[in-house]
Length: 265
Image 1 (cartoon, rainbow, N blue to C red):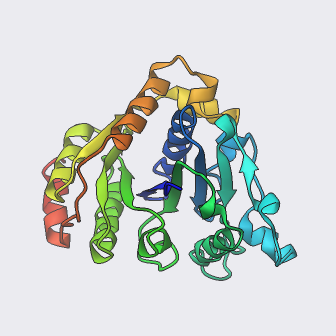
Image 2 (cartoon, rainbow, N blue to C red):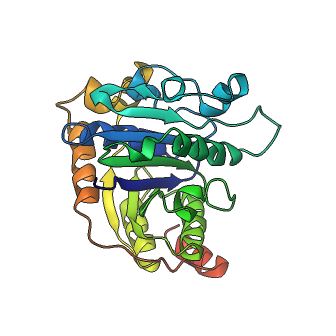
């Protein structure tokens, strides 16, 4: 049986990872059996695929330590298999622990032995926390993509994520520019990618269709399948699928990053 292609999408919280992941999954679902694993404590990655929030693994095993596949796996748009790791109650425990527990349960129930084509991991923030590093450290995901905009904190987080990828000797497949309307944004993100030895694998323009879709708990591909925005996600999906350029990144140090950023401002 062919091993599923594991793709991890990292980025700063609120940068649009979940939107990218859910629309990529929708795009791939026409030709592949796809699974999405939400590794963000907010547990909102799969909402637009399933049409609602689903129970998380952590919440489920608090009630039933012998949870089965039926308890944690849900079918979404395009028959995408959806699962959310979840997190602890606010102010209690380690958020990254949810990822560790989730992956252990998914191993136990044998989900990785299923005939899957693509598994996409939506991972919060950076890889400072050991829990959020699990998809890379344990080699569930063979390739990583970083979502960023031209905003300072988004790029700063992207640089930090690159440090983690380098430490873990991961394979960075590229940077996804999720535009926020910043001056010279695409130019800035392109230069950042080049500075760390990578490239921009896709640019997603800002669009009100994203918000309209999410209000209805749908992906753009489901709500507005014929739109230019939907086609942008399909193009990104194809770029990732056909990508041949993988690197161990060379992140910028603090002074280099500040110099880089301020030349655009």
